[in-house]
Image 1 (spheres, rainbow, N blue to C red):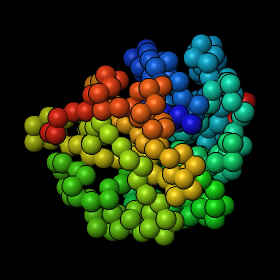
Image 2: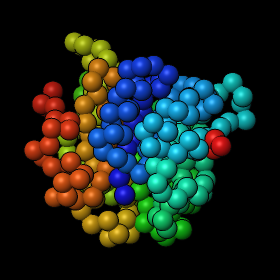
Image 3: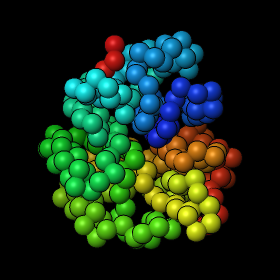
Image 4: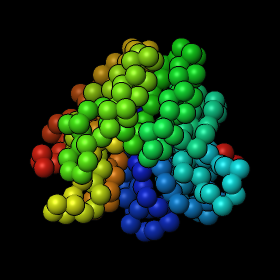
Length: 255
């Protein structure tokens, strides 16, 4: 099971579409999660997805507010069975595919609003299946995950840690960029943080031993794409530390 997640910050431009095409062609994921596409699903040409071997049908998280565009899309390779929708909200989409759960997340920027997300996902945990959660959590686990700006609040970090602990979740082993987000400022105004990550339960790690993710280059955008795949010793995953598929930085339903 290979997955990509990317907070793309707008998919209706050539730069984003070209980068996404290269990511999909290189890594050949079965599942692709996109946050903040900033257009309605019907505005994306189906020919674009079909050219990448992706199904022309995909899930989004529509809102009762017709002026709000869905902030999450979940797409899949046309060679796999269509995932079954389990639940969606304005902060996540959860599907079941091949008897495993996959959740993509775009969490609210306010920690009080994220508490609803933690509650929703805790309910899904009761299904007791292999579970992968990937996305932009807009939250930190420790102050070391943010450089610049104000420190993250203790309440926000405690909420996130409690959610993980209460649901027996762990961060997936990872490599590449350590800080996944940049506010596109420089000097005293520059802020870097680890907002994007992948979590899993023990059932997932037992089902996919050696599964890990890599954070690849932002290339002038504010969020790094995440690439998840099986053990890096498998050359088809291209996740080894010697890979040239994205070098680490130096420390500094729609139908």
